[in-house]
Image (cartoon, rainbow over all chains, first blue to last red; front, side):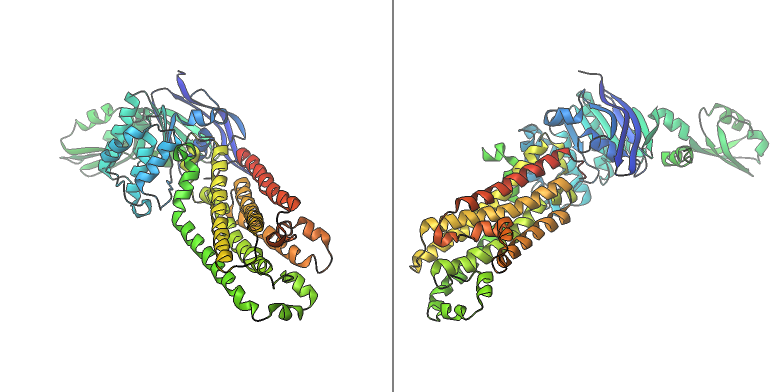
Amino acid sequence: MTSVVIRAEALVKDYGSVRALRGVDLEVEHGEIFGFIGPNGAGKSTTIRLLLDLLRPTSGEVEVLGQNPAAGGPELRSRIGYLPGELAMSGNRTAREHLEYMVRLRGGSGANRLEPLAERFGVELDKQFRGLSKGNKQKVGVVQAFMHSPALLILDEPTSGLDPLLQREFLDLLLEAREAGATVFMSSHVLREVEEVAGRVAIIRSGEIVDVENVRVLRNRAGQHVEFKFGEVVSQEDFAGLSGLTDLEVTGHSLSAVLRGSPDGLLKAAARHEVVSWSASNLDLEELFMDFYRMPDET
Amino acid sequence: MFNETYPITAGVLHDQRRSLTVWGSAMAGITVMYVSIFPVMGGLDIEALVSSFPDALVEALGYNEIGTASGYISSTVFGLLAPIILAVFSIGVGSRLIAGTEEDGTLELELASPTSRRAIYVQRLGALWADIVLLVAVVSAVTWAMVVGLSLDVAFMNLVAASIGLGLLVLGFGTIALAVGAATGRRPVAIGVAAAITVVGFMFDAIGPTIDAGWMMAVSPFSWYMDNNPLSQGFDVVGTAMLAVLPLAVGAVGLIGYERRDLMV
């Protein structure tokens, strides 16, 4: 078994004259849950479609489970579970008919997990697909992606449409799959969707990977919004020059700021006054996209 | 069994079961309606009426033998209604089975499954061909039942020859739609190309004899099918062979295009 499950090198994909991927480099290691984050239209789905041999690269190399997707063909895809970003299934079939169809396409693989997984997610197996709500359709997509216990799960915006309880169930399922030795590659346009389970995260913007980081490092970089209320009037100068502190606003008894990195300096400065209340909330990583990655194009 | 060996063909046919029932019933109804009128028309001396038409019009309408049972059934059911209606069905289904499902995204999971593009293409084409065989069989069986019931003068083997010709003709149009759709991924293009070939072929077959343009009949699938009046003359080896080569050749070209292309599900 190779330790690198997905490898892309200088991967370029053009649609006509439009360059969708501009040299993507990726390495996803065996057993990790890898987040693939970027705004809509950044090239997430294009990358995924190259992994599944729906698209062929314009140039560059791509390998999945040690094989080129086109050369690996059906045998390679039998070891992949895929959840599309926009799940479309014929409305006339019931959920059960769809899932049994997928089992047949996989030569019978996964038949024994169909019922248990469907039950776990509360899939209404005997309803026509067109009659299902968005969330219920998504559950069918989740079951078909996981039921044959694939070595690699490729999930495009997986939790969209799932209610919070089922998102929890879904994340548990992901962790179980990893426990069983699977590798997970999941894309999202919001980091919140992957930050709870992902180890490393790649950020893609305009067809280029701009960053690959541990999710905790990213979280740190995004920082926290902190607020203090004091028992006395404090002044801006008491907190000026502290490292990692930006957007500092001090008015009367209160302070608000954005903190990145260690809170030590801020807490010690605050402790010199009477602290009535305080709060720190994680800044959404969307805001990270906003200020950190939405840099103007240098080209 | 069939379900396991050809899951895609089986799946398509399962999805189509209601629409096939409707199309089959409609074809049976049309056949019964037209064939049952023939004995009534015998009393109207239809040949005398037709002989008063200009020769070119008679030729264009294919009414040369309208007074005989085989000529009448040729001019109505086998030469006009069944080919046109079944061509509409065939082009509609052919364009949907690959290009249509690619456009609406329902093909995505199938493509991501352990199935080759070739298997998807061949099995979907197989479903289209099975549809057409079934519907042509309905037309043929109902025609034969009417021929026997009304004691009409049509030879069984000639009906078989005409049915094979009709089946191959319609299969050709449907295969063009499926192949163009597979090679381009665009359903409107598939419908446009296949419909244009059908209409031009039909017009060439009708106009060719009246303006002495032999080349029009040489390239028209309708002429390959009907030129030698299979219902009265039986098998035409050359015409039947041409009709058989068309879907096979177009089908092969479509597959080559499909295996090489980016799929935009």
